[in-house]
Image (tube, rainbow, N blue to C red):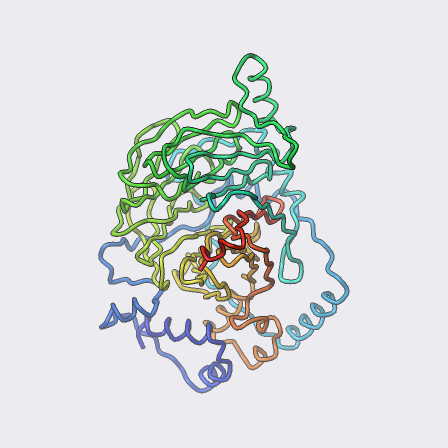
Length: 498
């Protein structure tokens, strides 16, 4: 059996949870996997093979998914805070531990950890204040797992009349920005005017600047800042890691950089020829990426108005995401593929197949090893960047998925979309099942493992429903608090979701 056929068989059996057939194959059949190319690549592409070595348009260079030294130093200062589980959960975990001890089934890692990597591009240093905040958040971080789920804070925008198009939340939970189809951006300060940015803005206005701050009326409402400058609908928003800047992309084919101190537009970036669907700051700041209806994604920096790199595609590119080590760029397109580019050389390194609809959401785990993608087909596919294999296919959403994010330890994946739900997925369970089956160490105990019977897919931990609010954004903070947000839709307008 060739490599591609074996990977398709493994993916089908794991996703379908056919435990009886798994036991038979592991006990009586020995697979001899041969390196080679399949005869009908189009058929494999339709079924969702992870990737193809016979694709001449992409490079065969290896992806170094590990973080570099500076990033690791910020993540290993203090151990996280562990929340004690309830008594019932403790009993379940103890019984599972006893079963595992009796089983004595070793699980071999797919690949050993890579050595520290170095960034291929010049990156700015973290400000001292931001580094201190990150270290403090790491000290107060809560450890999450299947028995200890995160706390969720959901923000709902009312009276938007179906005009909200996008939303973003800062990593420190201090700012929320929302884009609208009337060309404006609204900015909320979650610290009620006590943040550094609000205090600086107030001082500037006291010196004679025009006061555009929304005053409270007799009606209950929240104060916000209004950012005006675009001439088309807002499709993408992204906060800088230090919250000094906000990027916005629009239907007017431009990207604007806004200052959070003065609440004004600093730079207008022009280069795309069609609407810009998404914009994303790099994890270290300074660089950012955009994608557009013109079939290209571009790499920019805040000190140049022209793009540094252009990554061409054959169809609309709907979303972009940086790898945590800032060496790679991930894109999701209307052609149902996920592509990884070398940020410096501009080469296409890998193309992942498997989705049956356009891709609208991407997320890379903080350690850089796992990649999750989702979109219109209502499924989430998780990939292992160390082996370029599909680890799991997560099904459960009833509508298009618009946002994904990993927890800080990459143990839980959060997703939100048009079905008015926030869902939490067990990443440890998904990777463990995949590793056991790949190493041919899965046995009959999988049938009695309650952790894999919570839904038809087996890895859904919990589903949180909203009343009539599609979820535009889900985001884990550095302390592992899950933030989510969306715009309330009137009952008469619920047909928009169908």
